[in-house]
Image 1 (tube, rainbow, N blue to C red):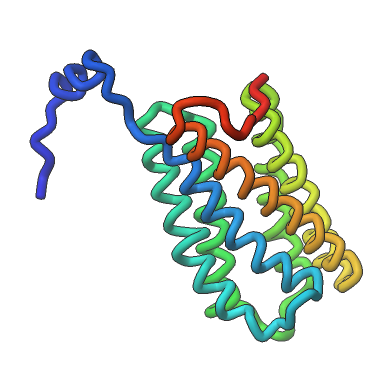
Image 2 (tube, rainbow, N blue to C red):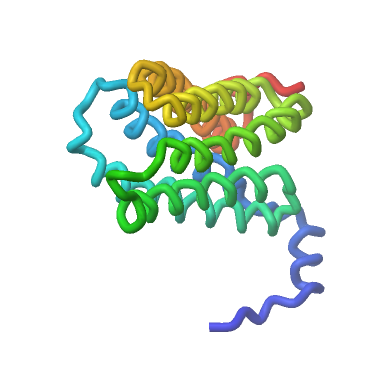
Length: 200
């Protein structure tokens, strides 16, 4: 059904102090959950047999939830949020589709290595923006940059040892993202700082 909301009615809503919900906790939770499970696989803590479960998470929780959060950030005028959530939502969707439909046993190491390197580059320049946001997000993006770099190097070198280190750093990334998600949603619900995000 088409919305009957007009620009004027949106302005009226803003005038009476009605704010839009923050989609950040949703996007961060989707990112953290999917990253945690895949990182357990990369670190060798669980067997590769759980990969199909990871891919299902990648499509719906990591992919669609983050992409929806990114679109919602557009509505809020948050350029960083749009770029980050849509980027990682697309990453998880692309990763799942690559593993399901395109990956071949004889793919050269550079195939996955270049795939991961692209996101390492994007994450690195997004990390610069977090220097103006808060410490919680800075921790997430620094750790995520390292995760992508390690996994990319591991893919290029066909090194399971480097992959395992990348998986361990990925687990730390997921924990940091879970904390950031929990802090934002908890502080918004309680309308005060319960869990600090260390704003700059």
